[in-house]
Length: 237
Ligand SMILES: C[S@@+](CC[C@H](N)C(=O)[O-])C[C@H]1O[C@@H](n2cnc3c(N)ncnc32)[C@H](O)[C@@H]1O
Image (cartoon, rainbow, N blue to C red; front, side, top):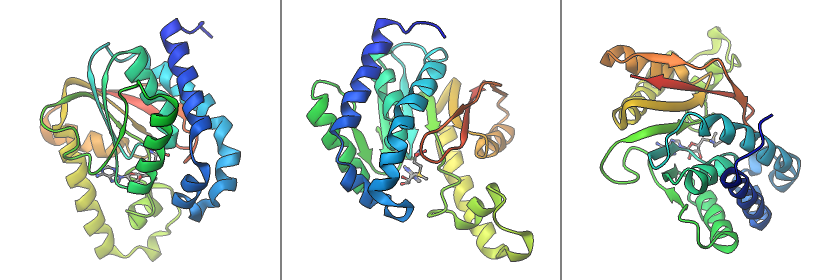
């Protein structure tokens, strides 16, 4: 493995410091259905290790000084967001609909990295960050979220047998998800990059096909710490 540049190493060190400062009890309540604080005690080492792997893979694909829009960014994305912000000098809009999670993450950032510009935004990625486009959209385990899309999630992960699919519900969720994918794709500059999981790539491929864009998918994949989905990169022209 290549030695990290000092900037990357410093950003990863900041991520480690912020992770130590987070209120894991509060985050445990956000994720209580997965086992809360115990869940995090088990996952925390992976957040830094796999976050670093994703940050390294992404850093080689992004230019300095660009703009990223992250959808549903949580604890797992913290190292990569700090690398983008600190090591690459990029503007990072990290949106998430769960206000309690955003508050806990921002409290950790404010306590452990007060001079760093990065803060999470509680709100919808369709409007977060105001006007303008982004040369990178990060979207990890959003379209497969079982809370938001129980049917799509079941189909995506192969948990829902065809005989049990509520077809009307499936169609409604698919149209809503297509609307989100279209809004995100419209915010992506060309050429642009999408970081997303294998299970979600089809939402962006569908948008590219509708809009006459071309997508090259990376062969490189990196596992994510919390959900465990494999993440890759879509180069959009
Ligand atoms: C399963 S979680 C994934 C969290 C994180 N990306 C990870 O991999 O651990 C899905 C997240 O997407 C967020 N989300 C869903 N739709 C969104 C939207 N339109 N804008 C911003 N966040 C959204 C939800 O609030 C939730 O926090």
